Length: 415
Image (tube, rainbow, N blue to C red):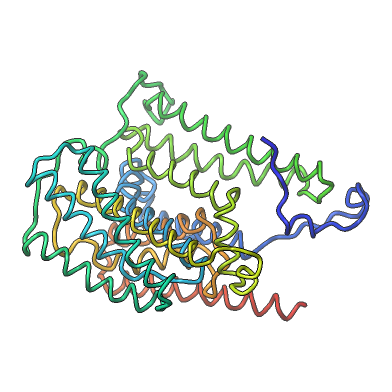
């Protein structure tokens, strides 16, 4: 598959072919794009030092992924809505309502779990369609619609559950939320690290090979179109660092209880949504709507349709998060999902989404969510009080948004 350049890429080099190879190469460090990864690394280093290395222990890394998987799922949908210039304050209530809906079908009605999952996803899509209609076609600001949705769907949750929890869930749902991939192959010895699941290691190696191939093809395509690329040493560094981090995480998980199923689900969602935002027409339209609404309208983008389907997508992802949360707790409760919308929004903004819309990445939102997860987990290991944790998370969110505003002013001042 050929990696085609974006319009922005094509505008970079206006000189003749090969001219950039003759000019002195300048290394540009994009602090805005790289800052989020530096922030995640700094957060991990700080809490690793404070916890005496417990943060990076195999079991604890597995706990971070399992405990914050539903927030990461919500962050994927939230960043798309923010890119389009909207917001969704109702996802926490939709998570609770979806979990309650699934619980009634699986526990009270004893329906097969695959049927219940499909029905719950449809329920989430209908919720998203309800809110998308009022935002896209009726013209009510998303802030108001989803604020009403926060109250409305929390009330629906109480109505479904009758102010009591419903459980337990089938084993398959609990396995999805808390389970791990079985050891398809035998363990392999890793010297002083002990044994690790061979299948998980192979999966990790395949992921690394895939990352290298994608980066190499992208670099080759840019060279083919006579665009500037990073020097080889910098390219190798940019490929090697993420590869080492991925293998470190996989090895630690393989030493504990293999790969969590929710991590597999998350990987599928991240790859799928990254492909949509980077390659698909719909992804381009999302950025166009958020970047310049008038220009997008004049260029033929069906703005109302794009916004409507974004909210439908958010409803489906909220339903997935609701199933995962209920399976993890083995209970659907009326207060489930409280404040999830704040964590999802914070993850998107910390991950680099612009307040005005038009800017943001799925991978950035996941990274922002991991920063929140590391702070929560590290604070738990250190025994911090809840108010301290909220103070730190609030400071991190404010710093991320302040950096976004500062970088925009800096860019505007440089023109």
